[in-house]
Image (cartoon, rainbow, N blue to C red):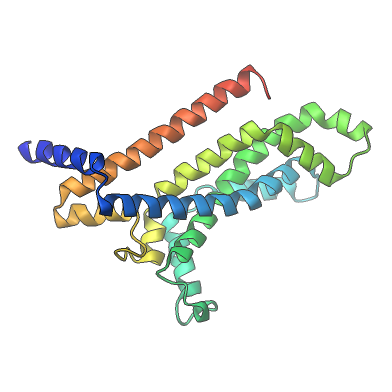
Length: 234
């Protein structure tokens, strides 16, 4: 028990003193996760909105597949990306394996279905409200998508926050494709696993507190935006 309290005190001082290793790992985690989130949103937000507006033959199957991909095991994604980026893989020539770029690619694959599914659900409800109006104005599909994206931007921000929460806490895939290399690809989750195995509980707890803090901020923001969305839109 004494070791736990000693570790917590040491972790607290690491955070207060802005320990160099702690800050480096935290900033790298934010860089990787935010970049992956930006790319995922550029794909998922328009695609999810388009799926809510467009009617086509295999739409139900597409939605079911999208929902299934939300539960895609991260380690499987990591394995697939590893094989694609490895020296013998089709993209091995680019030398991306064990770099932050490989970690970003893995995270994009993991969080895109999540963001797209939440977007689709939110835009489907909005489309039911706007359907008659937008049809009567003889708008094109691209105009309908843009209108829904703009008017539903608060719900879309909630979807983005959910994606960021999934990305920042990911460990399996980025451990495989990043390699947890010090000063190169080490992020919060992989560093916690490493420092725990080494017995450096102070740094592990410090990193854990930072990760918990980020998760709490995401949770509060998501809850706040959800409550505001119910009370009215911008």
